[in-house]
Length: 383
Image (cartoon, rainbow, N blue to C red; front, side, top):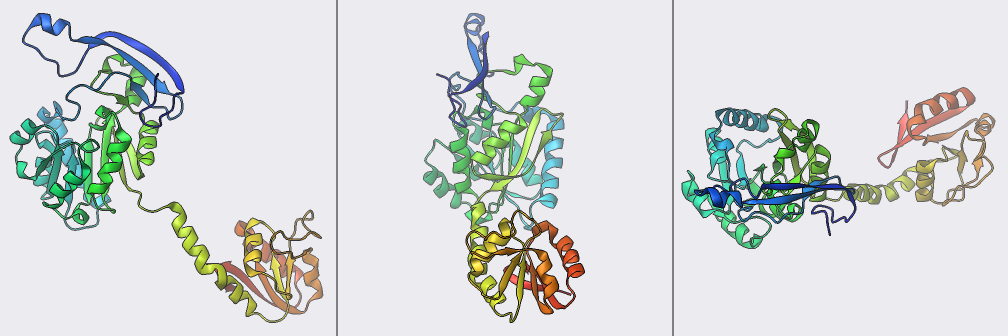
């Protein structure tokens, strides 16, 4: 049964099989006969739920290691140096960058960090890669998501304080992971809550447009478009800052940061702080109080205010007039009742129509009135 490795859906949009493809991208042999048998069928399918294109094949035996052919490209080195140089000006406010690379390989990109005078650290599974690396004393042996994260934390935080790690990057490695959600979630335990992350994967949008079926290989378990990569990043608990194509559209670059607080937290704080403030602010008014608005925002405010015998609610919508406000029980009147009053206070709560309603109210009123909006839980007088 095909199950999506990102959203766990069993709903499949489409699938096909590539026959007798190479069994790995790194399966070099010294023997022709051995080389010819290193082939397998690649079973490709697209998840109907999240849109991720993926293969059902088992991970290659070295999927935890990073092997970079791009390390030999002078152009890629130049582009990375340019990309990293721009990063500080765009996203990182601290004077010093402490960078952590997930999947360091032989430290090729840590060398670029060094050129930029950054403090850099890495995590790499292959002990052979670590031996080759310059600055290997700052590279920890392990794989995020399957190694013991507590052990990785202990080793890393002996080298650098967690709160100092303000940049994390993982370049063209996520597509190899059998459980990318778990690994991305574990990464958050290794970096500052305010860290900027750069995650990159090969661009399947380009592969689709060019019909490059030869790009499928068992090494790459997942094939991300901008949409499916965005879904993964969000589901793993990151907030996307920017996502774009990079390096002749071959790569998707996602700049993001850990999403540390619920979106509801600030709303709840605001509600709790304003709950009594609104009522107290209105109850200070003396005499006639008119409340123009019986839309959903106004109804919420009226319920929070509670019973006040001086308040009369007004609304221009005829189908509301003569009815009573749910939650507070105030009767809704026509605006023309303002013509009969010589003085009072008019509170306008009509959202985006506030200015229009204020203009209408001033045309109706002949007496001496004070006008207010509700802003941040308080009455703000309109001059």
